[in-house]
Image (cartoon, rainbow, N blue to C red; front, side, top):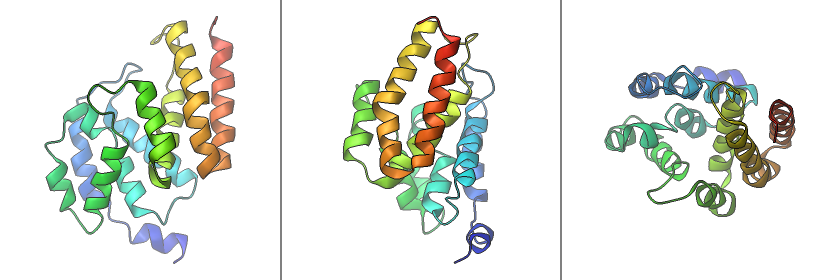
Length: 180
């Protein structure tokens, strides 16, 4: 199937409607989670994941469980033929109760198949792009960059070397901004 066919056959509207629940969820960096979901989708399209409908649909809802709860998961399962796989992917990239950030990232790195790793890399690129000194302390930025190098860059090495380049470039530029 050609790239154009993959995109023209992709039905995102029901997933976009579900993602509107995130409009009211503010981000520390400004804006809201709805826009972040679209930024993540944009990164995946930029990296030409046109033929992975589950990944693209899940990108629009990847923070839904953490920010809104799991009350909509049953509705998502029945949106279309991808619904169950989309929910599975959303759950895999969502932090679980009592899970530390390190445990969460390590779970995706060690135990996940390709899609969660790809989604986490795109999500982290969006988050790094939005990481600013006026919203985060030097120490928090430094810890976030360390986590990126320890967990997310190894994920990228498994799934897409272009992700590695972008992630390491972003980390390098953000490190220049901090005193740590």
